[in-house]
Length: 237
Image 1 (tube, helix red, strand yellow):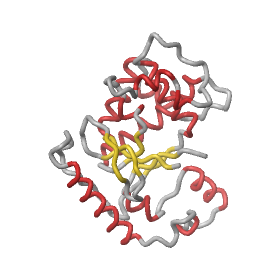
Image 2: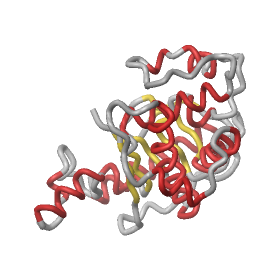
Image 3: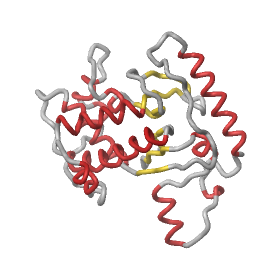
Image 4: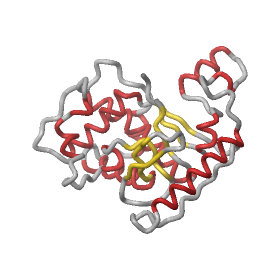
């Protein structure tokens, strides 16, 4: 199963009015016009119905947070179906490598694995970073967040998504800051160098650090777009 990252209005996401990296490449090769019906299970969804569902969900989420959390800024962003969207494909191997790279960065006594373990979500460093008693410096990356909102807040929280699944929600602004902090603490790479990391996806036998760099370049770019454009950011799998 692949892993894409989507930045854009949730209306476009849930109505299927977008393409991931592979779909765009396939359409370009075949020179066929883009069609919403090409996305499985989404072609019949109506944009207005999707927008109403997203707006109702956002209002309910805002009301449920209330004064009980540190999320004080209004949950407000553009949900027009004409607003831009952006995508990237770090893949699970890349994303998992980045998550572990962050976990090991805050547990330096543990040895970083050379390659991504098959069951990386049970990795000892990641388990420690997710312990209730531990205050992670990279919480919006390592704590199983699926949706980042374009609002600044420090916590992550579990809630119901637009599709009524339970998901973990974070902040794209905080994610962007934490990614920058991870780079400063480990690679200390300049922006021009980071751009080169995204030019070619590492192969299946690549070292964990190479895969982490690839995913970092994609995630940092998309998080910056989410912040600059005030758009939600979501994992798609």
